[in-house]
Length: 316
Image (cartoon, rainbow, N blue to C red):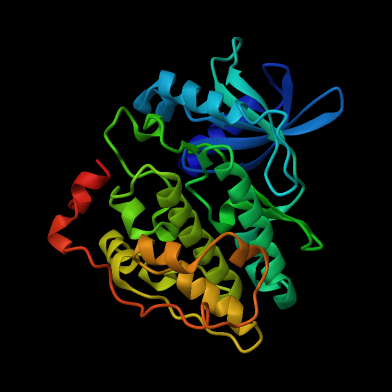
């Protein structure tokens, strides 16, 4: 969603009520929605309202089903995962919305330069724990990136946000726009198999995707810069970078095991990620052993380029 449309929605809605929530201010905007601060009986929440034009484009039924998926997490609590409080269609305004806990934090992308180096391991461990929490419930987040991670002012708590493209592992491809398998997520933080929609719909395959995205976040924490930052334009250059480039990761003030973890996460081949990684690697940094001393060589993906779908078809 562009800023003009988001600001127009803000002008229309601030001071108004959506369902039972009175909107007080605009907090943020994304590709498909605007997030507002709202309240009811002094309870403050974050209210995500979806862009009606995009809802119409992708289908109202599909979006409502996505909202129901988020609502399946109502009452399910994890300290590092945003709490879902409600959602649906507002009868008065017609807007589709999701209600989440309000977190008075900035996101990780806004705080990269400020993160204490000795807390990087703790932060990535917290986000990994919330990702595993979703996996244990048969869900994959699919869009783990710094913009979707809130960080407290004291840097002690990181919270995974934006559950709008949750994927039910092993079930339907609901979030794929009527089986068209369009790319959903963020190109810059997605592994090649997700970019080209070559992933398998298994717990292991989605775990490999989560590992990659966690590694991309870890890259940013270590390097204080977004992954593939210099490849942002033109679009095709970013696609090539995701497919072929192994980003440089090094820092004298960060434990070498964290650097090794990030590099291993970012292996292009998902089977190699699964071979060398497990959830425990994020939750604690083990001592160097024969099993984890070195990751495999960082070779380009083994797939033949001719097997990939042309860029123009992937995002149509």
